Length: 82
Image (cartoon, rainbow, N blue to C red; front, side, top):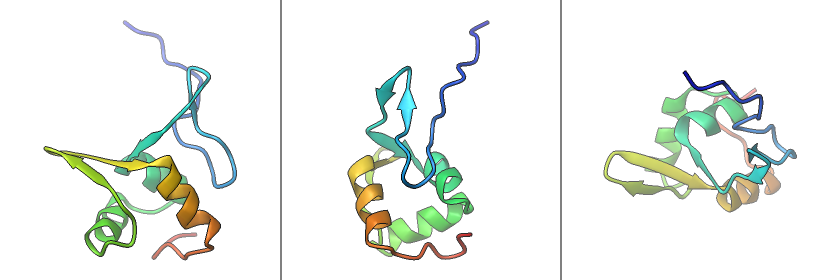
């Protein structure tokens, strides 16, 4: 059984997300929802409304780090966020 890493998968705004010491370049919907403290459905709705850009490959949805950082730096409000 693989040991669980203590490395954070998603960082709070202003922090750098890392996996095994490397900067994370893409996030899943669930990771972004955890970072912004919202329900994953909120992230999916924002993607559908084209408020944030995401890439779909089959059933997989990924959001680039630069998209997240740009959204955060513009001071945009996340619907339902804390």
